[in-house]
Amino acid sequence: MIHTLSTAEAIQRMNDYGHRRIPFLFIIDFLTQKPIVLALQDIDHADLLYDFNGKTNAPATNVNLEKSVFFHKHPLPFESYLPKFEYVVNQLKRGNSFLVNLSICTKIETNLDLKGIFLRSKAKYKLWLAEKFVCFSPEIFVQVKGDRIASFPMKGTIDADIVGAESLILSNLKEAAEHATIVDLIRNDLSMVAQKVWVERYRYVDTIPTNQKSLLQVSSEIAGQMPLNWRETLGDWLFRLLPAGSISGAPKPRTLEIIQEAEGYERGYYTGIAGIFDGENLDSGVLIRFIENIEGQLTFKSGGGITARSEALPEYQEVLDKVYLPFLNELTPVY
Image (cartoon, rainbow, N blue to C red; front, side, top):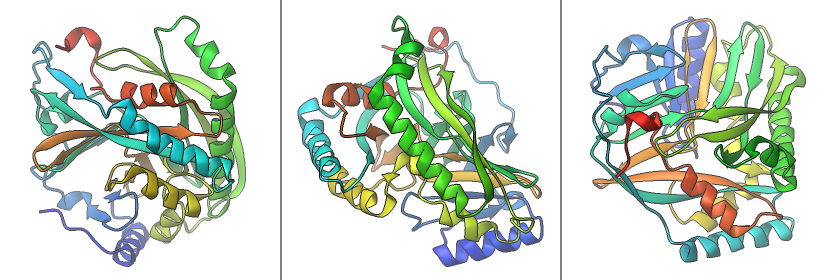
């Protein structure tokens, strides 16, 4: 049974484990109301499975990858998405925010259960919480190696099959402005906990395979130097960085209010963060690409960044493109 903590309890436990160099896993929800902090040695794989860049407790298993997978989505109609989008754009034009991450819920059907999706998924950060959710995220939140911290916000997604897709996404003025805003926000966030913050890489492109098609995803790398005692204060500084800028917006306080007003549902652990402290270094991801069991109905939560230049239909299509299973096309036919 997985128990949640208060924010104060989670911070204290993370600081203690960091001070004593005890390896642990943490899962923090979007609003930081139900954090989970578990020593790795105490995790029961019947309750929770993780695979973060190869650090895993998942037992070796033979998954039949030749089995055809049924996957069908029932998206929110565009007519229902449009008022949410228009509300956000109106707030942006009033100057109440510069960037808002707007998300929606999509009901899905598949012949796999949440654990089956976890076992087959290909992603940097995989997490399965029994009967609750599965996440297969491509997005790094922060990594700390030695005294170097780095964050890798993702902003900008396009269908890789579109002719000239990489050039199109990199030259798009709306996407460029959105990405610049997030890089500036993350740089400011890291400056609260680190010194000598700099942009290491700006707008590089990765390919994300899905069961439907490949996507191109644009990211940047922002780095800084942590104080020598960062392990002893791990909980304090990590919570200062939340929520992740790439899945909230800027400025954060008013943007969080706009998100709640526009979306009309609870994100829960979706767009929170999860990671592992291995006793020396820290690795964490943003909880996107997220399927939740809501009263027996599998629901895929997905979103995208909205700016004053955004157009409703492309933004709607982007959130639908992000509803997928991260398997290679030829191994998982979709019916």
